[in-house]
Length: 77
Image 1: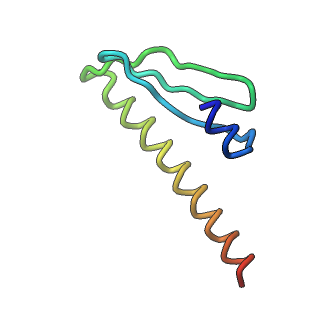
Image 2: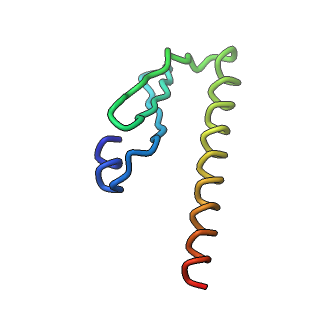
């Protein structure tokens, strides 16, 4: 995540996740601050939470991409 932040030359929030066995961890890199969630165990109880988090991150990505596309259209118009 630090490498992506550096390559994109952007201190914006970066979202990520990693899986260790059946434990899912969600992370945020905000400039130089790195935060990690508690483990979500991939069982029937936590699966709904894992899916909800992934959907929310997907929505953040969709909105960000759409905004960048609009910005590029204005620049080229």
